[in-house]
Length: 214
Image (cartoon, rainbow, N blue to C red; front, side, top):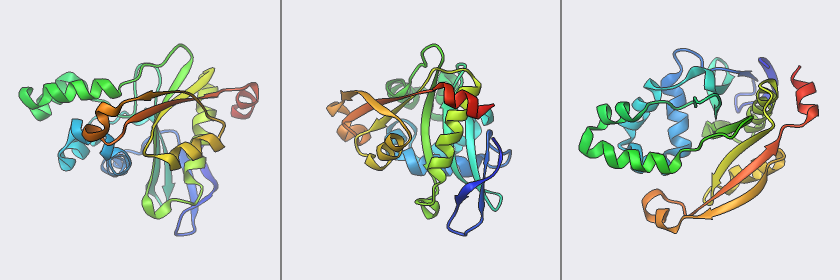
């Protein structure tokens, strides 16, 4: 699904949803992603300037849904499918960027955050919306497109993990049919990464979703 959708940003124009990250928007997407998830990713990728540059350089353009307003990316939803996610960069890239001594502990932290999809499962990497555009339905547009994309790829369900300090995101997911399956308590991460529990949520991809995606 591409083209103007039923959502409007703060500037009042129509929002366009695309199933890819536009070329040239890498820095903007990295900025949005870091603003949304920097608290969680900071211990692994700080300092912020280095982290944003790393994310921008290793983006997989075809693993993101972008919301554009007046040609500017104002929202992004990343996902993992077929062994690739929106944010790329392997162990060699981390070590090349941060050095061996500083890079090895970062790899351990990143492994804590990594998730592997099950068969016929799409894993979401989260939604990031520009602060000035929140509350205008952009997150809902991105989620609807994620569901349509999952249906197009014949996935049976969508999975995501939400941390305990992000209740607004959890409420959005629940409004769109996601239900909590389990919560993992991680008190040892409270001081290090800013959260102490992670809830795994699922949304089944129903027959109606497949019909709507066609």
